[in-house]
Image (cartoon, rainbow, N blue to C red; front, top):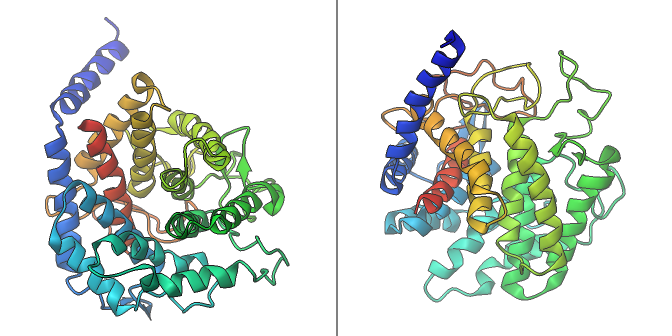
Amino acid sequence: MTKRIKALLFVAMLVLPLSAQTTAEEVLNVTSRVNNYFMERYEDPTVPTNWKKIRPSSLWTRAVYYEGLMALQRIDPQQRYLDYAITWADFHQWTPRNGVNTCDADDQCCGQTYVELLPYMEGADKEQLKHVRQNLDHQMQTPNPKNQSLYGWWTWIDAIQMAMPLYMQMAQLTGDGKYRDHGMKMYRWSRNTLAGGLFNTKEGLWWRDADYVPPYKEPDGQNCYWSRGNGWVYAALVRCMNLLPKKSKEYKELKQDFLLMSEALLKCQRKDGFWNPSLTSTNYEMKETSGTALFLYGMAWGIRQGYLKADTYRPACDHAWTAMVSDAVHPDGFLGWMQGTGKDPAAGQPLSYTRIPDFEDYGTGCFLLGATEYYKLMK
């Protein structure tokens, strides 16, 4: 028996028992531990963040956390989760950050949780979300002065996750298809028009923004596909499809992109179960938790929907979960190997098991999204 075969057998002996022993209850226990760490560390949800400058707690990083918290609420209902989220929404008057006239997707992200909270609000109705609706109505008639396009606001792919699901939520809530239609047109503008199109359909991956399309290359000559940026789009596709009729043309359009991305992402997974900050490049080869969690979210969802073959994608999900639990989740629930805010693989470097990123909230939200969807798969 060669040394290589012996090594492979040894790795299999280590990984397979871990996957076999994992239960849905264990997944929930880890998920709760991670969330408890965050809620205890940031006990008052109204307190603004303070990293280099003061920012209100309705900013996008915190809004992503609440997306994850609401996902956890659906599998493990607890009043304290709702109280925490409602206190936050009340404090910000159920209004986008920077008011109803903002056209910045980062400002709108908090609206997704406002919509999800509405059914839990006794006596509340759609009027509770009037500021969110006013904001979308404003954007839908306001061209971006930088490119003169009515649909040209999402100039970075993170924005697709921050705002596109909100358009679909508003369409479902009001029954008015104009929100769905406008959101799809904005998505197509980013996908097909901006810098020649940010989605490389040949490779199934997205350039983060116009700064990273060819001829831009990583030092090893590969295209620059940022892990978390692609994770944002992947998660947005799931969140939007969850709000669309399965037979609709919009659902089928997003599903096609989801399948292209799934195939590409599967090829990029590291042997240890993580994904690199740069998906196809050797530049910054290392574990990274936020992208890994978002890819787990999408793949676990795709398997449950019957869109991704379990024989092919379930091992990738199991491997990702085992990797994060083994190498990223601390005993107290802190998450290591988390890339800080930025726009490319170089941001927040160097990563490590113990390094605290500039913002912890969005990384926790990403983890909760991936963990809760994996829990559903385990069930």
